[in-house]
Image (tube, rainbow, N blue to C red; front, side, top):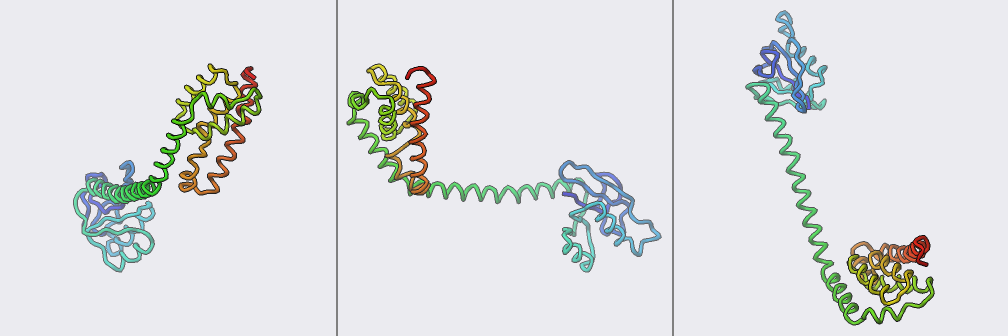
Length: 252
C-alpha cells in the first residue's frame, strides 16, 4: 500500500501540512518496507493551482491513499470514486501515521480470519457430534468381532491356494479394519501358525485400506456412492498389490 502526504520536508520525520497548497514536499510511502519517494511541491508562483497540481503529482507517484489535514469535498469525492482513499484531519509525523495505518489494516484483516476459523471449528464439531453415534456403533461391532473370532479360527479359513488366500485375506482384513500396528502382530502370528504369505499380505493391506464395518460411518460423512467406489476399488487394488508383493518378494 502506498500512502501520499503533503509535508514540510523530504524525510519520514516530516510534518504533514494542513493543506496541499501549504506543502513544500510531496511524499509517497510504501507501507510494506517503508521505502518512499519525495518530490518538491509546486512552486509559489503556482499557488493558485498548487493543490490540484500536488494531487496530480501524488497520483503519478501511484499513491493509493491520501492523508492530509483538510481537502475540499468537491476534490475528495472524485478521488474516492477513482479508487483513491482520502483520510482528512491528519496531523503529525509521516512515519507515525504510516505505522498507525499499517497496524490498523493488519487488525482488520486478522479479525475476519479469526471469525472464519471459529466458524469452521464449530461446523466441524457439529458434524462430528452428528457422526458420533455411528462411530460408537462401528467401534462396538469391531470389538465384538475381534473378541469372538480367534486367530485360530481365522487361520482355518486360509487354504493353500495363493489366489484364494489373497481373496480370503482381503475380505477378512476388510472386516477387521483397525490400527496398522495390530495388523503386523496378527500377520506375524498367522505366519508362525502356517498361513501363506499371500493371504497374510492381503489381510495387512485390506486391514488399513478397506473398512466394511466402517462403511456406514464413511457413507454418512462422504456419501454412499463415494464409500462404495472407494472400498470396491481398494478391494481390487489390494488383491493385485498382494499378489505382486509376494511374487517380487520371492515368497510365492
